[in-house]
Image 1 (cartoon, rainbow, N blue to C red):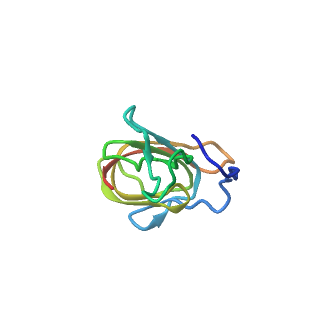
Image 2 (image 1 turned 60 degrees about the vertical axis):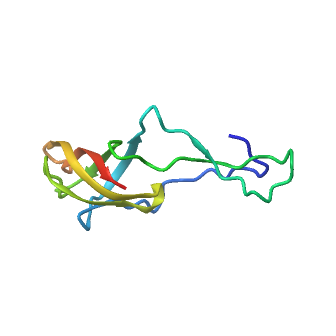
Amino acid sequence: MPSDTPTTIADSQGLSFSFNGVDASAVLTSVKRKATAEFKDVTPLSAASGATRKLQVAPLYDGEEISCEFMGNAAFTKGVSGSITCAKLSITGTAVVTDVEVTAARGELLMGTATLKLTST
């Protein structure tokens, strides 16, 4: 992606992920983008001829999947639809839970993975 300024590498500290207003105690969140995801040209019309173009990743599309690994009893139930928010990854919209898996081991925290499909952004 062309850029005329250095890129700052972002970290995931302070990441919060909520579904239907409940914090999911997320430890890992990933987004699976459709193959059609592309960069959008956001260069202003006032840019001089030959200037470096400014590009940004296109927003999430309906149907894209988000996976969230969580600790504890997060409020995910397969088939349930609700609001989804993850400000650090610029995710807001409505999603349906398509899969949930919870792992329990003696002496360990409950851990799980939920997969959600965006239904509106």
